[in-house]
Image (tube, rainbow, N blue to C red; front, side, top):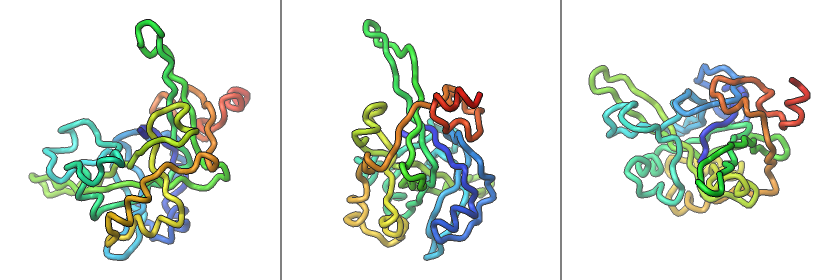
Length: 235
């Protein structure tokens, strides 16, 4: 699962990295993006690559409305080709969600009751400071009363690598830069896309504990990404 991530770079900076045009007006310095928040994502439409704004939580075209069900923030790689909510998007509407890091929680349970008694947050990011490029799917939902369009997305998740498996049993699909063009190609075939749905190498990632302040979706600021010991010293 991916339920929270950091996206501090501006759409203009993301556009430079992905050789795209920025049409999103989202601000940068967003260190605690949560479900239903607006996010910047890279898409190709009619061979034009843009960085645009989407709601995090995919709303399929056939849904009654944005609040008709729990937000579809993640799409499982194992069923993305066949799940009704995602198969059309997998075939024709793929995107990349850039992130500086994502957060996961190690759940500590009472050995007798099995209840979660403590959740310990961790940040996972690239070892060399490069962007994480999450594989995403997007959709358009049209309001039948107003004809207004809602653009939304989900992040594809799969089996964790050995590092992330120490805290969680799922992780986002992170695309290697060599695979960005294939994932965004509107004409890419499933046989080209399936091999991309693999765990990102553990040796290229860092995982470390961070402040429990990240538990609150209203918490923001670069200090959320500091290792826990450094965060304590900074405070």
